[in-house]
Image 1 (cartoon, rainbow, N blue to C red):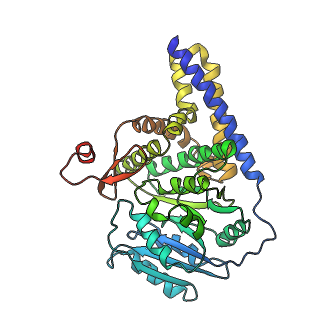
Image 2: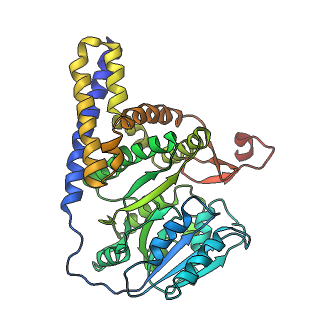
Image 3: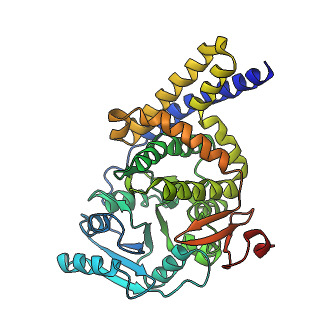
Length: 386
């Protein structure tokens, strides 16, 4: 009965969280994009690339077709042999009127290759307003118009864009998308409602150059795995306004097989645990469905409490996944959500163990403060980093 009592408390906490999620979703939807603001401020878009990923050309094309008077696109790859170069060249030939440049950065001298690419592009960017966007992002034609209008408010120094994960063909990709669209964004919205935006989430961030300069530039972010999170954290601590943009983007996550998808998930949860350890432990309450099932198994007589947890999880998933993100998976394949909740719960527990990650074929050690370092080949992670 002690175990059942503890589970009952946890289910009650998860029910409260689910209600907060619905309220947070409504609060976000109540904020309307800036109306009547026709910003023409020029924008520099920074795009780090690495290889010809799935749908890369389609993703990049949405940035070449922006309905906006003045912007430039900067791309960065490590080597002149990167196949992403040919993709960009085709788009440059197709859209000769769009200002765009390609940079060859060479190998990064520190762990976070993405930050190195952004730093090199920042040095070449002509404009003050910057959009930093990953290669797997797809946007609507009015994207730049919307985010530029939000920066007409002088109090805004950095904006982070919510995103809808678009899966590939594999089951594991669809499960991950279901979790990102109904659970991950829910946590962002609840944090926004309770304490304001004190962080940022990739994969698309908009900021002014002066904000990056004030927080120490990319040099301060280079050793962090979750550079997006700390970028927003440092900006908020420096007194700049950080907002969750009204502009939602698409994050195309591809079709990874199970093993690759699991490595990706473990990298994510271990990074989150290092970036905000208290918040990571609190994520326990974001799993009402697994907690409700455990409660029902431990004490069948408490099935009404378990049923309430399941019902509230369905309500919160609909509020975030459908009402905020318009994710078709929530409607067409709703059964993916409970499967993902169970898998996500197991991955979350696994995140408490291990301090290494695999990223682009290399192994890294995670430090307690969120920094990371390459593990030299042939050496054990723990001994190499002590």
